[in-house]
Image (cartoon, rainbow, N blue to C red; front, side, top):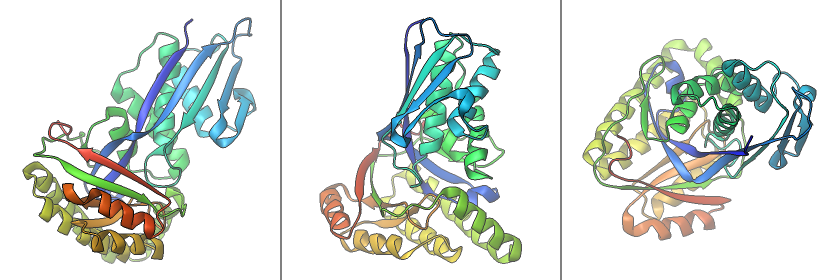
Amino acid sequence: MPAIYSKAPGKIILFGEHAVVYGQPAIAIPVTQVHATARVFPILNGRPGDIRIQAPDIHLDSALSDLPKDDPIATAVQLSLETIGLNSPPAFKLQVSSTIPIAAGMGSSAAISIVVIRAVSDFFGRHLQTDDVSQLTYQVEKIQHGVPSGIDNSVIAYQKAVCFTRDKPIEFFDITGSTHWIIADTGEKTPTRVTVGDVRNRYEEERETYQDYFNRIGAITQKAKQGLIKGDKERLGNLMDENQHWLAQIGVSSQSIEHLIEAAREAGALGAKLSGGGRGGNIIALSPSGEIETITAALLEAGAKRVIKTILTQGEGS
């Protein structure tokens, strides 16, 4: 069997995080400047069922059988084998790596699961459809995040901009013009599972108040979709600021996030907000085409640990 290679991008949420868990829409785009990869090689003369998993980024080098049942990479491998109907596969080695920042709202765990599922199934000549890959990844995501929205596995599996509403078909939409997005890492890491769980606890305590917050974020997201379709950058920037206000209200902003948002706005960003789980991780800013480097420099000077620039161009949402 030849070696197999699989690659998947990161992602960033533009609008609707957290509210998407409660039935509201969210908009996300792939970020191809960072990615996860997986390679599968045969182990010559290995015994059937022998599987070696190597992930240098997290210092993992182990037999599959020695990993805990809730290990996400191990789960992705097992789900892949079960789906293609292999109980005792020929021996193979899986190598996984990623340049996607961890616990920063960029879909690192989903991207890794996707490349593992694709590489393992393709290695055995059983190419899975994108929807199957996405659904299997969602099963792994539940181990990582408790009650995931489903947006990470969707946007990364399809590698297209999406408007996602839980339990509804994925919606791709045509956009007008190009928008320039700057992603800045606060350097603080809070797992999405933690912030999602905390918001869930607050929701259970104050259902009416928090449902109102989520509804407001959902309405903003619907307006943002129209802003993207029409290419109305000023409107999009204002909506980002509104979205950030309500994210702060539900308790997922932080001092480091607000500091970078302020720096981006002062440097000329049309709007800025946190992206992902919050309490650290990334902020995202919408930049006029002529201010990208100015805003980037301002964010680095303000303490951003990493800045990634990406462009959503006409046709990428279709």
